[in-house]
Image 1: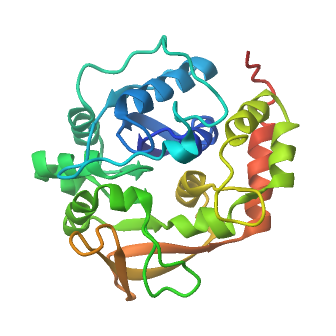
Image 2: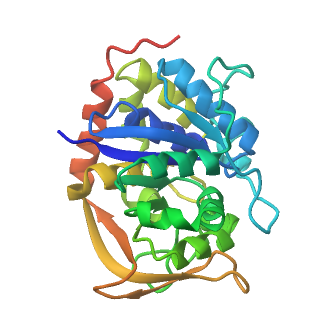
Length: 308
């Protein structure tokens, strides 16, 4: 089986960490590099959290620390939902064993992509600052990127999608504009998918908790990560959807469109026009039962992992 080669750009973050727990143990993925960015919390903490995940699960993958702020804006954070240290109800240690690479995220991405065969897919789980800086600093790398999967976007005018600003794109809309203008094929996993279609119910979260040590760890994070603004208790799965859309596309319903982003009047607001030859594939829905079944199957495969 030929594995899918990826670079994961991330801002852990509860949903990022949960995604990584599944992705790093997926036999279909070959993770070449992990880069961190300011987003859910500051880049110092997203990097610390990423390295701690490697410590906790005894995994060795190179990590490079990236942008500490948006290209031209004051960087917002989302501590109100991810909590002060970024991992919800779980508190990571201040000191970690794994160390980041000496080169920054942009140079590490450039090196890994340059050495590849044009088959390494960046998966962007946070603001797209690192990718924009890569394209600005090394425009020759465009030809080595087959496509980009990204979590973010709340397209206006799409039936069933609430018209709100996506955190990832509104955090650095100028970065997303640069990514769009690169003409690299894009796959958008909009924020609505993880909130309203692929979310975890309270009962499902308890099933996760009772599965094994990994489930207990996820539950500890989730215990202070309930999505605000809903009558029921639910956990959003935006980043996990991004990874699954790449590796298990049969679980998702897609469409094609052109996407644009506002950088002035309502920064981060995305506009789309449905086109068969559009520059972006959008994930419109998920086969929910099959998706939840796969999540539990993957979690049970981690029964052998014992966490302290």
